[in-house]
Amino acid sequence: MGIDQRRWRWWNAVVFIVMVRGTVTVAGSDSHEKHEQVVSRIAFGSCSNQSAPQPIWDAVVDFRPQIFIWLGDNIYGDFKRPFKVFGRERTIGPWKNVPRFVPSSEQEMRAKYEKAKSSPGYARLHQNAKVIGTWDDHDYGLNDAGKEFQGKITNQKLLLDFLDEPQDSPRRKQAGVYASYTYGPVGRDIKIVLLDTRYHRDPVGSDGTILGNSQWLWLEKELKGQPTALTIIGSSIQVISNLSATIHPLFAMESWGRFPKERDRLFKLIADSKRAGVFFISGDVHFGEITRYDCAVGYPLYDVTSSGVTQSVEEVVPPFLRSFVRFVAWLTPSTMRVKGQNCRYKSCIYGQPNFGTIEIDWDSHPVTLKFKVRDKESITVTGVNVSLKELQSSNSETFNRVKAGQDNEKHCTLEVSLPWFVRYRLAILFCCTLIVFLVAFLVLVYSCFRLFRLEGCKRKHD
Ligand SMILES: *[C@@H]1O[C@H](CO)[C@@H](O)[C@H](O)[C@H]1NC(C)=O
Ligand SMILES: *[C@@H]1O[C@H](CO)[C@@H](O)[C@H](O)[C@H]1NC(C)=O
Ligand SMILES: *[C@@H]1O[C@H](CO)[C@@H](O)[C@H](O)[C@H]1NC(C)=O
Image (cartoon, rainbow, N blue to C red; front, side):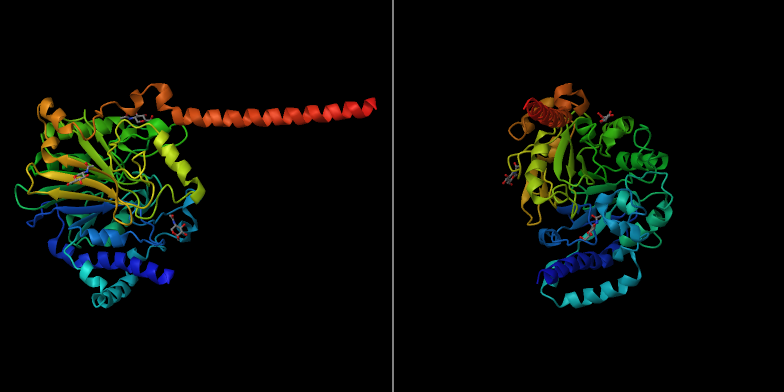
């Protein structure tokens, strides 16, 4: 029964994706496509292991998104096996393990789709959702890879096939998968800008570029062009949180924070563009969280992170260690994380499968946005309400008034500016624990040694 159920859920996902194929093709997806319908429900997700059960799709479908955005690691199709934790399937061969990419499976999927039409689930699924997306390292083709990765041209084609990009789309001719879309009528329009953080990216640690010249020029045109009520910038890696600064030297994460010059350039571009209503969505980290940075542009810049559809930090540890993972999450300092009242856990980080949602109430005055990360039952695990008025450069008075009551903390301190004992408390705790164990071990060894010697002496004496 379990397997049937799993299979059904899996097909929900497949059907969801196949179903939207038609719509996307009709709509096209070149940069200046206009879609007049008012958009008020958007869902997004990342890090989805195609071989694992994906029960979360029930909740995504129930949310009835008008747009679903893939933020990367939409499939795991690594070229090589960089480390063991992700299992054997990567070694089978390039893309072999990725049925959704293999054209021959298309027929089969269409057949299932036709069959699903007559099933009770179909009514729920039948909607005009559009699926758009970008990639991250594992569908780009190699863990943490950047511009040096050889397979990027082939894999760009595979990703665009996966996203049902029309054959004549300019996105198939450019270097990288970045794209932009505009939905909704003037006044209630949303621009969605999807970045490619892989194709042109310099090595981590170089403080070089993430986007590369051509993408920067494009992004500048996009942001300085026609204003829209809202602008969502989708980045596979986190933009606001710089987790590396506080988990160093135990771990390191990819993020815009690791490229400080590039990140400043992004913030400066947003500020210079005078564009209001900009916020980020991101994936990659295998947990969900909402962060904001109040001192980058004239208004708070939010980053709503949802990761993963299947891959999550709590899932890679045995169940009895999950509380420990939550404890570590709580202990990790963060200056940018939004800590609302409705967080599932104290840390306001959620390390189980999740997806993100953006709900826009265009009819309220002022227009309000709800950013949420939801679990597989669609229950909010962290969320924040934001007034659209809050997302525009205004005098600081309004800014502070709007802010009051929700989250009193001002999120301006960079993680790297924290006092060292706060910033490194995870590492300090780790070292102290290690030292305690080491000392205990040495004491034990010494005691045994003494005991044996004493015994030896006693025997000699006797
Ligand atoms: C994906 O799921 C399969 C089946 O559960 C598992 O064997 C594999 O290791 C997973 N791959 C990754 C990349 O987590
Ligand atoms: C993020 O953290 C890394 C590692 O500590 C550091 O090198 C980098 O400068 C930080 N970035 C920002 C924007 O603070
Ligand atoms: C957001 O607003 C809704 C009502 O529309 C309320 O129920 C919810 O608690 C609010 N969430 C937060 C995080 O303030």
